Length: 182
Image (cartoon, rainbow, N blue to C red; front, side, top):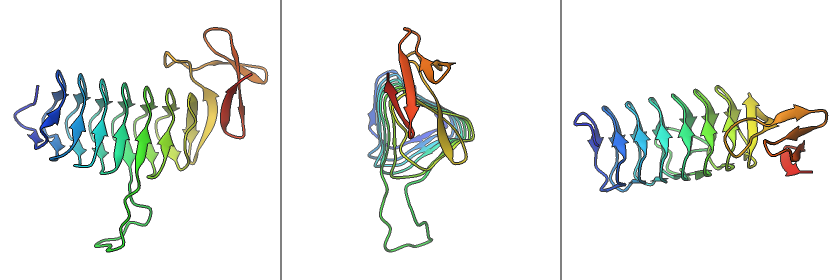
């Protein structure tokens, strides 16, 4: 379903993907199957979006971004792809950003370019992400810090003494911003 009030130039839109009013999708963008692209969004040409991705209103997906399967991007999340933005910059070098499968980006989070957001991670609403995010990390704050671990079903692990317990009873720890099973 492509809403008649959207402007879709790409011919690479997967089956059962919904694109709502006032969305702009430029020629060359690739969007997978069963996605939900909400109103007031922009997706540039050099973008790859996987299957079952949800992009909420007010989100702009810039050239150089890859979004893997089953990612959720909350309303007004902000991404960048230029380390030194300047009008009419003749030395512009695009930064690539990869959001791995099953990651969730909260409302109003800001993600700088050139990063990798790990699979099954959760970026809290309003967080400012300036560094790569480990797989299964719960990131909060400005700048964002790893404050917890996520289960594969998208729920946070339970904090217990000096470690975290996943929903299978396995122990995990955060050490220097990295998450590992104990």
